[in-house]
Image (cartoon, rainbow over all chains, first blue to last red):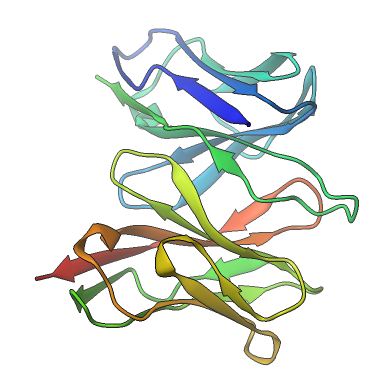
Length: 116
Length: 112
């Protein structure tokens, strides 16, 4: 069966420090991968998605970047964190139907990032 | 543009009472529709999905949802709420291609 691992679960980082969040998927090949951010009490904001190795699409201009060095690995990074980067970060995967529509997304357990 | 609206930011129901969470979408074609649940500090879990066929969809944990094309709605229902159902619920639309559009969520409170 498919599983998704996301770590760390919680992270407290000072302003200006770098960030690396990692997400890996098992049990499926060539998934679509996603990074979402969820601010307190708010919905999901899509940050990045990837349809293949090295292919990254950014949804919003921001202080973050993403990379996909392997088929089932997705990394969210920052060179210098801002206070506004605090939030709950979720990794997810899905596959594309032959119809061209996405199947349901499967989510990791999330990373609570607090920038201090 | 495609969008998903969940009109209720939060809802409070008594344990054992029925529940209906509203979801309206804007999409030009027949959508793929989803409901997810999120417990505090956790990821999202799929409750149910609609792709085609029967417009009444059964999901996990006793939830069901009905797709009404004429009303562009996909409301989530449960006949009898349990205290463990307290969580945040997200409606989502499968956008053509790689993206899924999520609603802002409805937080459910259950009172004893």
